[in-house]
Image 1 (cartoon, rainbow, N blue to C red):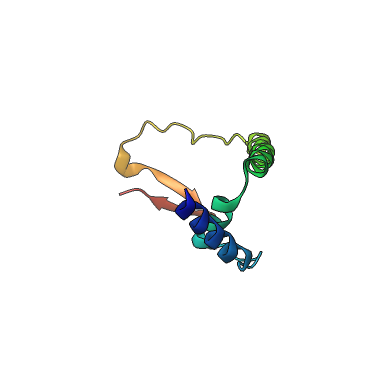
Image 2 (cartoon, rainbow, N blue to C red):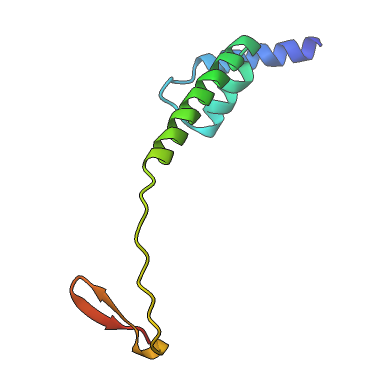
Length: 90
């Protein structure tokens, strides 16, 4: 147990030197390792709220698009109109 406390104290010292702007994986790991349970629960709630906002945003921006009209001609005769120019499918 003593070795664990010493290692945790050393990790906490290193975590205190990490810049708040550092978004690296190592910095996130250090800060996550030294975060207490209550703080972790609070951050989890914040992530859940943000996830809900993103989900609502993408649900609202769903725009139906019109499908191509069906063409019953042979495939080599199909043509798509792109910016006023007809291009045949080959």
